[in-house]
Image (cartoon, rainbow, N blue to C red; front, side, top):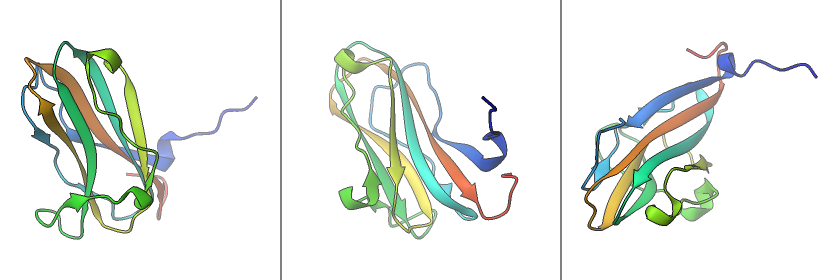
Length: 132
């Protein structure tokens, strides 16, 4: 079987940086999707001893304002709340909407003494290849 190159067809942008221990709601940085025709949000959780974080993907036409939760109809898949029962996992959700900017928000819904997670937006199908 011959493998095909994916490296030149995607761009991975961090929206939530990994941190030593996150104990509150965390809002990711805006990611500009210009120049790409597809996007997927990926959350990688590490050890999570207590509490609950509920992930959501948000969208906007402007980079710094007007972010709203992406409607279920504009998602391919869904996120699951992160608890100690499903920690150390990777969740991914595809974006089908048309807004230019995306970010991940991890809302602390049950108090936590600390959780480890990071989130990225994977951009694919570049208008001009190879991807930057």
